[in-house]
Image 1 (tube, rainbow, N blue to C red):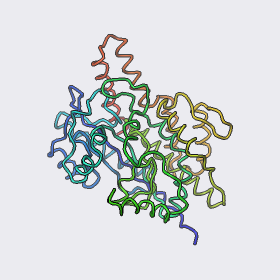
Image 2: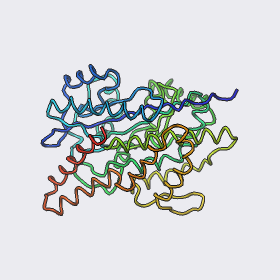
Image 3: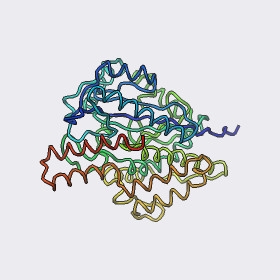
Image 4: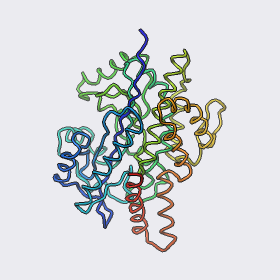
Length: 377
């Protein structure tokens, strides 16, 4: 039996850090703040591993326009509530100068278990990400598209990079978040599977061994969601600007529709060796969009903008069919304006050039992230 056509529905999850509006250092969210958020937003908001974090997630959205409206409303509400406490939320994957060792984790069973199982590795998790769910209801189709989609994960990472600083130091990487996250088990590119049943057998093996309790503790860059009939892209840094988050989500949705259409025409995207895709993943992590990725077909590094132009052209008919082509073209604004990581480094060096000391220059970076959070709301 042929798989049903996917709905290509959307859900977007974002994790935010909460900072003091004057010092720009991290603060722990009071229980009353979280309660107010949950009273207004229900299950669309939840605490995260660390008390200085908050997570939001849209509902199931039929279109990218619906997802944008939902996510904008979540950002507005979180900001308004934080402001009543003298706080600001920022959508960034690492705080430019905070110390991870001074943070405290949320007292929930899931997080107590994580801290116990992963020890110091978990305690360093002062990082935030963005996850994009796309509705692919057929199990085997979901796994087949996961195998093919892995090729594009470095492209999405490069566009989203927002973590160039760690503990007050410029790291030289555009996504330092992955350096931290990859210390966890069950991370990185997903392994290839021949079927959903093969995937389930693998997961069940470690569940039965009492290593994990369910598939939510599989933290690959891309995974079949353990809770929803979706494929969940998890590789992205969180985007400070709403429009850029939506552009990346729209591109994710459009690539999946392109891959499904190829399959319906008895074609498929070539699956390259994991070793090669990991090299592009590293290049995206290290350089963002500035140094290009490897074009495996010709065996050369190609400027990222050239690869992006080709990708947008490939997905154009699919984005148009989904009603999200305008949003997809927002990726060119990321190239023009720079990814968040590029902009943060620029703010830091401009402030230093104008006489700010290192601490004040880092605070200027956070100030710019506070401003970015409200753009487009």
